[in-house]
Length: 103
Image (cartoon, rainbow, N blue to C red; front, side, top):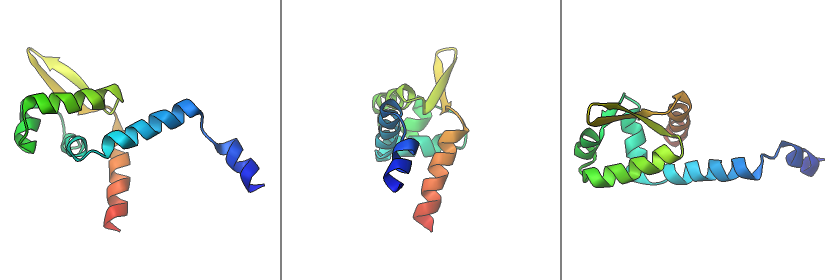
């Protein structure tokens, strides 16, 4: 019965791949720091680079990965791109993990 229930409740391979990719992306400390910083509101690449003390190019590379997974989104204001979390689920995901770590 347990095996049958587990099979019924299993998610599709596509969803499983996407979920694993999200967790893999968030397992990188730089990307996790970016997501944590964006919990407070939008920031541009130069702000994130200054905060993390890494190059703007390195930040842009990490943001591209996060954007590809729909973890962050951007908006343009003139020549500047501002990044923010894609939706509240991302913040909740991070908060649940942080709560668990602090428990």
